[in-house]
Length: 138
Length: 141
Image 1 (cartoon, chains in turn blue, cyan):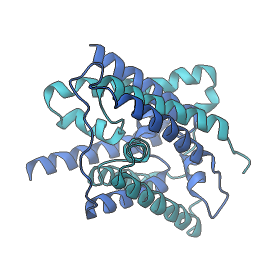
Image 2: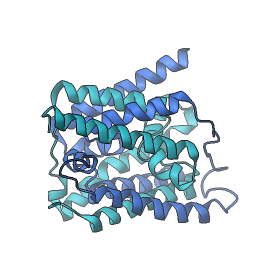
Image 3: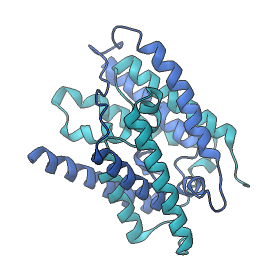
Image 4: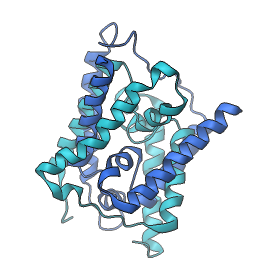
């Protein structure tokens, strides 16, 4: 219960940050990626702000033996640079550029983004589920 | 650069950072949205509820922010129709194949100085910029 409430709070903060920073606005995101056009560099400050806080915060948190409500930290252990990583990131970037939406903002805009948000979110979730089901079977 | 909003962007970014740090401190997890979302279905039984409550918070939060400034919820979609669907498929496949998105790689992985995340971030930033440039060339923007 304490775990679920604490992750709910994390979700609230995350979604609040996406909204305050306007990451939830596809037009704003595409203006950020439009460096050869009418560039709006604002969103670089989103990643900058998030990175500074996370960089310092992780260092303090990961000194502890374990998280507050779980047995241990679950950190990615892979360090190899394999083709799926780069191909996946590349494809994701194309989709991000085409629509101006990545997974967090796509979810966050479910209640106010209208029909286009539903189309994007529904398609993205179905694709992720299909991918995971196919991968589990192989 | 009429719409340059560095202060609200940095403030929002700091909130995202706090969310990531709190998720690590309380649950020991990386705040990667594509991974949290994907695991709502395929993760083990006891590993699911925290994901749903995180996502519930993520979805409710904009409505709370909107009470203070409703203009933040007035969003525009430059891309619609079939191209929007293609984009969503690419985001879905790309984040699963590449094990992360703007949050998991871009924020959490980079903060851990993970080389996989640094390279992934450089890659999706590059293809994102090229894609928007292409859209502009083709008159889509």
